[in-house]
Length: 390
Image (cartoon, rainbow, N blue to C red):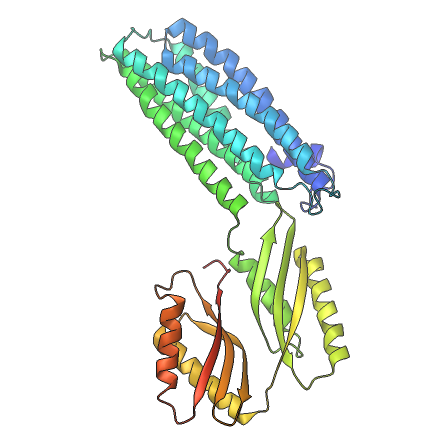
């Protein structure tokens, strides 16, 4: 069913990096959601009135809020598809993240309202009238919401959309909410007490936690997350496949919305190589990364000496010292400047965020261990962070 709808209503549906195609996916998700949620709202409102159930009525208005969320999503995808302009040279893709925040805020509002109504129902309980037609209607509602969850999850994974994945989570919340309502309705036929209100409280707490989770994940996207490990591996493979590139470091990738990635890295090349040939290779690599991975990539060349025995010996010493301090430490841009009384070792140390040592602690340990060497080595160290996801 999902594949049929995609092929029917999304033109060029395989080109998921294209902003217009993403907009069409968003339109399909939103219009489908509006249609399903309005239908469910009408059915549950009638059933809630028949059964005198606060949990069913609250569930109905939860579906109505979902319809409003779908409208927000519809406009969000349209705005995100706008091309770059002079005020926003990297495009408008991050509007998708803002749309996720709005969606999560709606979920929180619904959760608080559901919690308030449920607490009042616990304090002032009313009898719930069991009805087979109500039970069957709620079971059908669960089936619809399960389909919507799978539908939006499939679309969200296909185009890497946090909005659709949040919508899928919201549909799953509705399944749990309606299931709790069904349990409440069945128990009400056998047990006295505020079962309806208690179930409403349980559902509202779950809804609130899901809204918080969506907000937490979306804010993390806006603040900037580490580069995806799989993407980094693919970029590294493309770069290191060229014999002119001996190593790489300082890779950074910035997201300006799904499908809009900009990155950079330093490529280590021989200091004695043909500069024009190396530059030509770098241009080809940048083009290949964009064509294969859709990342606008810039590569900086770092010349290194590969035939100096003294530098190689010093490099091995520093490498061994870093492994002794913390095996996760690495270094790059290693060079030597010799003088009449001492030699400066100049290099960058990459420190992962998980390393408990401070920069000053690492510097002190490096210098202490180097002082035990026969050579008189001083250090000029620059510390970097590792921006790659573990």
